[in-house]
Amino acid sequence: MVPWTDIEKSKEGILQILEVIKHYVSDGEARFIAGIQSRHFSEYKIQQLLCIVRERLNMTRRELLRLSEIALTYNKLWATDDNNCFRDAEKLFRKIRSTLKGTKIIYKKFTPICKKNVPNKDFRPSVFVKSTLAYAECGRDLYGLESYPDSVSTLYAEMGAYFTNVIAVLVICHQELAKEAMISNDAELCLQLLNEQCKNIVGDMKDVIGMMSKENASQDELLTKSKKTSSLKAFAQQGFHKYNIKSITRYAASRAVESGAEYGLDDIESLYFANDYEKGRIAKEIMNCFDTYAYKGRGDKMDTMPIAEFICWTGLGLSRGYKYFALRYKGQYGLPQKKSVWSCIDGFKKAESEKEDGYIEQKLASDFETRMNTRFSE
Image (cartoon, rainbow, N blue to C red; front, side, top):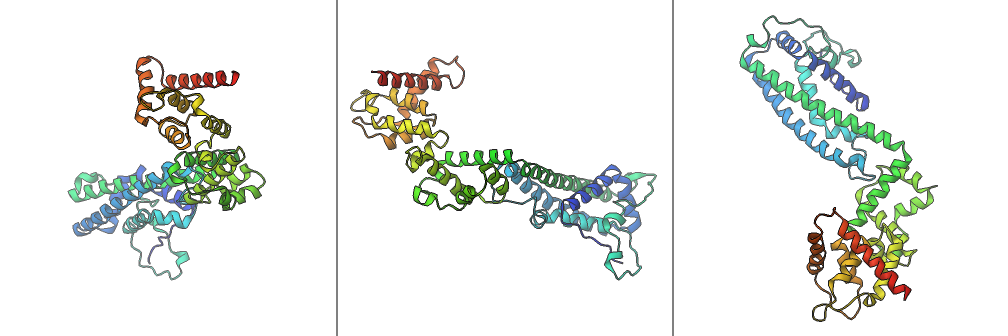
């Protein structure tokens, strides 16, 4: 009779294998020795099984590393390229194929042979029940592993390492399934994840610059779908882990461009100020008359101070802020290099080194606010 090795491809199947293996771990040595004795393993068979276990151990370690990497961001992102990796049974069980196959092979090797013929597979016992490594009754060897050759002790240690990694793989799967189910039932959390991912996407503008315009933004599939849904929160909940990175990148850019247009911003300005369109509107007005804030520096170039203050006021950061300024400034002065602007800010930081991080940026931003208020009050 050939024992049954099927594993149900579901969350329940994962829990079943977890329970079986944890049962073995709690009484491993006695069950291992009982299996060796019941199958009368020769030295050759021990060495052969040792090769199988080591091979599966390496495969399982690779699967553990792959799943661990996916799990780092899987439930922290609204859309991923691994959507349903843990939820979809077929996808999940393909990800851990080597892990599951290894458990089948090992448990089958430690299942007592029964020559009774049972033609109907429904009446055949599972190796995860019949194996001495599982729930079968077994006695204890008086002398333990010390009475066996070194190869047996080595096999026991390698099997322990393998099962430790199997448990880690299955625990990750179970935990991510539970997290995903929890998030799917929380519309507020889904919306938060959607907004955060969109914010990060437009924040890394190299992914979206040149991708969208006001004309084709309105044609984006996800943007259109979100407008047809009862609310953005409902759309976020319904779409959680339904779309890939390419789709949400287009959606984030489309949403930013369309929203920015309502404040009179063009495509690029909408992406730069996706987190504060009102500030973008004011920044656009300032750039149209920036020479009234500026004054001459070295040669024909503008002094770095007004630029440093403006960049800190925008909150875009030095690199993005300088790029925006260089893109939009059309006045009479030449532009100092970015490193000169950085040196200006860095000089203040060194002079005020005892101040907390961010103090100088806040002060320069405040100084620019004062500069604006003074100009408008004149």
